[in-house]
Image 1: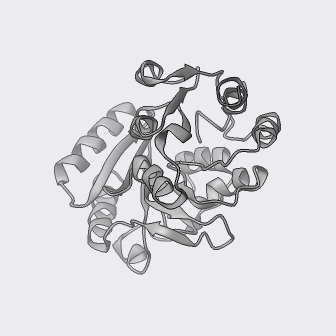
Image 2: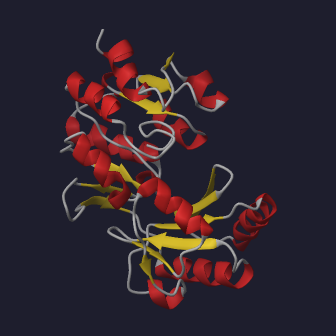
Length: 258
């Protein structure tokens, strides 16, 4: 969604939504975002089919409860290890985590305010330690820092911990996100194939970043945003306009409805 469906302000433009609705084709959102952050776009696009959150960590029905169809939360032991290590060694980093329905953090700082400006969500304030997450199914940990040196150090530190069953990924310069190692966008696409009768040649996908590559390789028509990373542009069959120029809606009409 970010950098693709959503514009630079983190919003789905009404003009983009109108183009997508006019096409009258099935749409599934595939995002690193949580269901609560996907909900406004789901509502605007009147989506009723399976939706994919947490980079494939959760496939859910787009209802008020975000009922899970497939769920891959991280283990409680892995979450506890990670939360306690981050709080101890990187106390200035914005640390938060998500279960299926809610976003949690211990304090509202610059990083959390930045994320709020993009998602328009309000986190629930808790102590971000192993005890706070013990009774929850945690799908994603998110760390935000605007200090590149701190980001690099934290990324390497967490990789060196070798916590089992997790995937650690950078998202831009400011974000480090941790999900289950079973959370893959390509797995979400395979679920759609398995449960709808669709095959890759029936499907197109739009993407802008490195983590979209497995998804783009699974469909017959991969489409890059004009603002995409070069590796995505190189893979794509087509390139549409940018996320600030209704690229998804325009791409559907330019490349899929002919």
